[in-house]
Length: 189
Picture 1 (cartoon, helix red, strand yellow):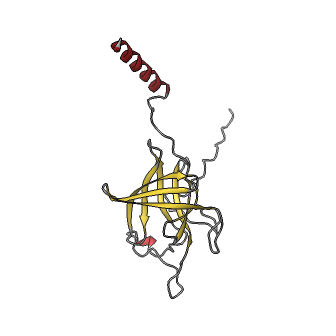
Picture 2 (tube, rainbow, N blue to C red):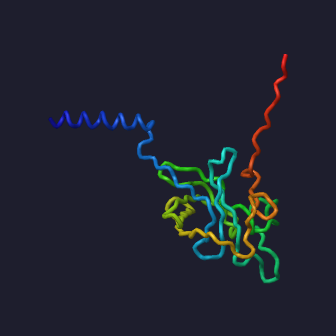
Picture 3 (cartoon, rainbow, N blue to C red):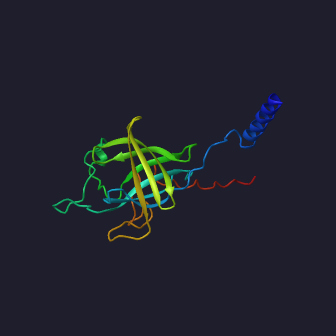
C-alpha cells in the first residue's frame, strides 16, 4: 500500500509540474513601481518599468533632502568611472539599472552608488503594500538590507514629470525608452 501511495503522489507532482510548464514554486514578483523614501530619508527613488519590452525595473532619484552643496551647486556624479557622466547632477539621474524578475518573487540586477562610483548587485521586493525591501551586496556574503517606505505625496522640488521630460528624471542611454519601430508600407504589385 505504501508503494502505491508514493507512486500516485509522484504522478500527481509530475502532472502538476507539467500543468505549470515546469515552473512549480516560481513566484511572480509584485510590481514595485512607485516613489519610495529611502531608509535614511535623504532621497526619494522612483521605480518604473523600463527596457524595450518594459519588463524590467529602473530607478531614478526624484527628490533629495539636500540636492546642493554649501556653495549652492548641485551635487555631481564626480566618482563615476565614465568620465562623460562625472559632470551630471545626481538629482534626477538613474541609479537602478534594469532589474529582472527572479523565480523567488523579487527583482534583481545592479544599483549604482554615486558616493564611490561603483555598481553593486541588488535585489528588491515588496514586503507589504507600502514597504519595499532592498538588499545590496558587495560580494555574496557582504550584504545590507534597507526598508523603503512608499510615498504618495509630492515634496517641494520633487521631479514629477515623465522620465526624459523637462521636469522628469533622466535615464541612462541604455535604458531610455526605445520607440516602437514604424510600420513599413508594402508596395502593391
